[in-house]
Amino acid sequence: MAMKIYTRTGDKGTTALFGGKRLPKSDLRIEAYGTVDELNAYLGLLRSHLPEGEEKRELLEVQNWLFVAGSHLATDPDKPMELPPLPEDAVARLEAGIDRMEAGLPPLKNFILPGGNEAVAHCHVARCVCRRAERRVVALAHESAVDEAVVRLLNRLSDYLFVLARHVGRITGAEEIPWKP
Image 1 (cartoon, rainbow, N blue to C red):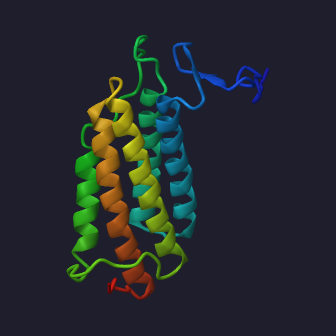
Image 2 (tube, rainbow, N blue to C red):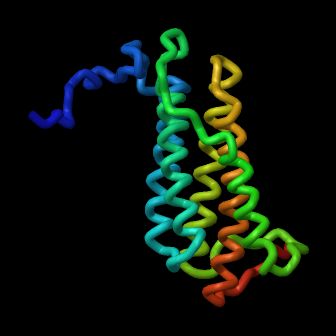
């Protein structure tokens, strides 16, 4: 028998963590993993706008990592569970992607305005959602135990997404517009 999508257990504004503890849906832990989930969904949209290539494959891998990160954030810290770990080399792999893409880009001399074309704009929105997810996770870490690997992943991922925006702009011929205050 298939699992029902609706349970009605959240109808009064609470939700359960892995481990059974119920929290208000406004709780910082729920906000943190919900924003990581939002980022994951946005990366799926971004992938649909990218040309075939290494970056599209890397983002699919990142989406899997974000599911792992979300599962850690959605687990009751008082009831540790056996969860898949984030790959130890996740940050190094993002850095390798950044280095690969930057090798073909002109040096950055100014801030640049987000945009250029649809794919580039989606990269920038994903970067902003990633930064928000990072802020939510860091805020949670001030209150409760959070795997530092999650914070490092989100921090480096936002850098990756910025460089991806520039890289996609270059390969699609989008204009990079410098900010002129």
